[in-house]
Image 1: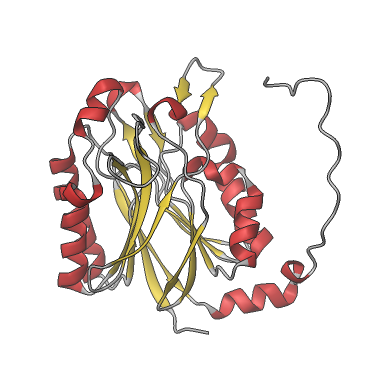
Image 2 (image 1 turned 90 degrees about the vertical axis):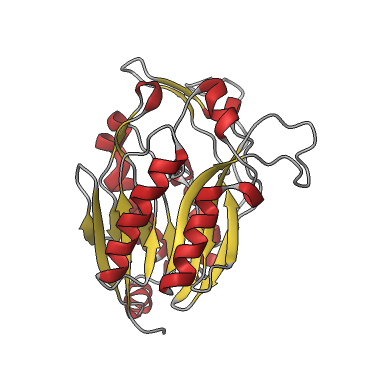
Length: 290
């Protein structure tokens, strides 16, 4: 296995404008790097959180996005690896985007030379009505991705996911079976669902797959009356929480020992025990939420 390394999650409150968000993230990233972080991770929607038409107006194509350019330059300057949890990106001009008005919710893995190692577009869209009256229709604004992504790093293989993906365990199983040692879950989790499910779901994904789970999260109040839960987590393959960001803007770090992956998988070798099966027929009646 690879040598141990230090991972850092940046927890902050993204505003509606990319420039001040970039200034804040660069400051936090430099602080994390100065403290010894080798892999620095940001939450979902790092460049800005905005609603409605203004979101569309502020989104830039990947080649023109100043936030992405700034973080690539940071990686080149410092030699750190960076996971941009996701950026709001205009996919205009990309294959398959002809006539598409929706944006992309896209993760970027950046290496120590500033190169983009991997891109991942969020697959599962957060279309939900919460008991407190909050309602979200992410699929109106973003086109869903269709491909899983597992990328090589100096420390092992990283499986990329984003936020609502967390509720679909088969995605994480596929990544682990494809050799993922670490699973990233950058998020803007709502407060009600965060309180109820955030910790238990992240710990479950770690335990089920014998992987480290790295989950940088937004915290606080954003445009459109949106509130996010915080509690950026780093969880080891046995389900132990190594770091919890709690509330507020902060940096959480943990030493990641890749040997723990093999140790956990020896104790519970469930990745070796998957079996194919015939699924049941779909129920003829609607599901409860339909």
